[in-house]
Image (tube, rainbow, N blue to C red; front, side, top):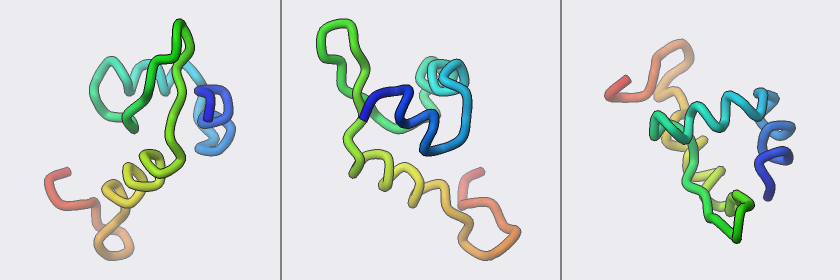
Length: 62
């Protein structure tokens, strides 16, 4: 998926996704020429890693 599609899916600005990339916080991406693409499986894995362990509790290490 494109960065614009990911932005829409997560309901966050594209700029935030670029910031997360620079900070190493977002899902892994693939460069295809000058374009950035995301595997849906990588996005789902990243979401799973950031999921609360229990309602109201941040994931371990956060």
